[in-house]
Image 1 (cartoon, rainbow, N blue to C red):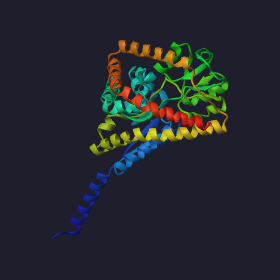
Image 2 (cartoon, helix red, strand yellow):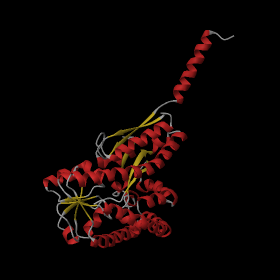
Image 3 (spheres, rainbow, N blue to C red):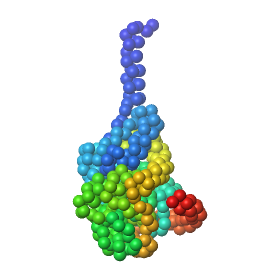
Image 4 (cartoon, helix red, strand yellow):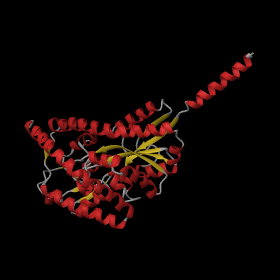
Length: 364
């Protein structure tokens, strides 16, 4: 016969077991960009998916840039465990390893015409993910990475006056991304100045720089470049593909359950698609607003830009491949993938691109 005491002890044990079963893990993820950015909007959506897939046992708390450490210290803070997670573009860490660029923003489509959709194909089915996982060991950091948001192609940028040639382009001090994409501009004689997104508009207003690129119509308009510059060029090669990624401290990741690890993987794969879908529509709305309501004039990029930049980009890729074995391995993987996939993908897109351009021209 069970006593009241026995029942009470049993109930307490069940309660403790239930509490343990539904223990909540919170991963604080510091972003390198302001909370209002589109990337953070999509990161929060990823976090909601993870929470739903785990029944709330794993939650991601997004912190704004600078909440715990400076932007440049984000990856080191994740590595050391000062923060559990970080969110940035992996090419930010090219100083730790040059191959970071091939995952974060492979310059000029890795020199072989890989766009953002083809890049995801390489990453998921062409051997990219395995090399991405190896990257962190090559860097010597205790990090598990998840690729979340492929964007591209990025716009060439914003200018005070129309540019008809590279000679016109070279008159300007131009904000560029760090690493090889920015260095490639220097290699073709452009006065390239690397700086964070939040610093660009103040630099334009003060005259520290004369022209700038950041991303695409929606993010660019959020930063307010249209307040200072009115001439906008969509076609660029410097960042045909750009990926924003999540970094989790390796010890924190190892401590997660198999279900929680799988939830991160599934939500990340979903984010790869959702981020591209979100960006197409949001950039379309932003471009329409910029041209109709803010006096922004859309131009085609000068033809000589493409030949000059591509030649310099290929030279930079070859130099880095000659100097670093892992860089060479990753780039070779991308070239092997492109040899198979790009002839099909580029050919298949041509007719639709022409049709789309004809439709866009009919709206003018």
